Structure formats: C-alpha cells, structure tokens
Amino acid sequence: MSAQKRPDSEEKRAEPAKKRTGARGTGAAAKETRANSAPREEKTPEPTERAVKSLAPVGESTPALEIPGVAAIPLSEIEITYARSSGPGGQNVNKVSSKARLRWNLVGGRLDPEVVERFKTLYPSWVTESGEVVVSSQISRDAPKNRAACLEKLRAAILKASVKPKKRIPTKPTRGSVLRRLDSKAKNSAKKRERGRRDFE
Image (cartoon, rainbow, N blue to C red):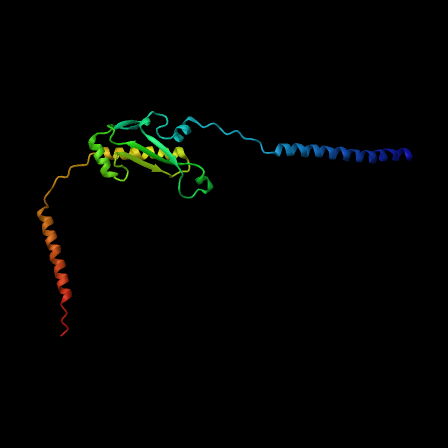
C-alpha cells in the first residue's frame, strides 16, 4: 500500500514546484508583454517630391517672381519683413513673428508705365507716396506661408493691372427701344395720375 501511495505523494510535492516555476514563467512573460507594449518611436516617412513642391513657398525655388507675359521680378528687389500677428492663436502669437510684410519699388522700371498707372488706379491703398508697394499677410501662423501669400498677392495684382481695358464704342439706341421706353413712361404716368383722383360722389 505504501508503495502505491508513494507516487501520489511525489506528485503532490512536484505540484508546488510547478506552480512556482509557472509563476516565474508568467512574470517573465508579463515583463516581455510590457516591453512589447511600450510605445515605440515611429519614423516619419520622408516627404515625396510632389509633396515638397506643393509645400514650397512661391518664389523659393526660383530666383525671381515670374509673371507670365509681363515681367520677372528678382527676389533680391523684394523686401520682406516679419512682425507679430494679430487675432486668435494663444500665447504663440505673442512669441513668434509670423505676419509677413512685402515692400517693392513699383516705379523701378520693371513694368511698363501704363501698367504702373493701372496698378495705382486699381490698388491705391497698396502704393505709398514714394511709389512702393506694401502688401501684408497674416492668414496663417506660419511665416513662410504668409510670405508665399504676399508674393502671390503681388503676382495676381500685376497680372490684373497688365490687362488693357476694352475701349467702349458709343452706340445709339434703336427705334424699338425708344418706343418701348416711352410707352413704359406713359403707363407709369397714367397709373400715378389715377392714384390722386378720388371722387366718391
């Protein structure tokens, strides 16, 4: 009988040892899972060539501001300064100079005199007494984006001023339009004349 019970006692003794080894094993596995669950530093993908071109500010890749069919203004002649931006944006607005202000000499000879005169007529508030164009932009909290917006404003304004207005040809009204106008006036006159007469007898 004792020989038959011995294996049972050995199995009972072996059970605590298995539990201890199992606990150690679960602890090591938990450490591994914690290490695996720790946040890993993900590498940001490098921007593609198309994305870089789309994010590049106007005029950065070329030495001049190209205006098709009008002129090419070298960026060295354009002065751009930065200042504090107004509006919402938190404390960052008070720390970073993101507002861009562009200055360019309009009467420096880059444009035709006719284009210069039309520019002054279309944008009188942009031109100073000394003939400088002053354009500002604070649409973004990023200084390069505001710089690109200023250059784009200047480009669009010069393109608009370069278009010659069509000369108006004076014409005479047709006989039918004259008759229709006189008929309409007679009807309105009669309508108002009837409003003043009130005979209740």
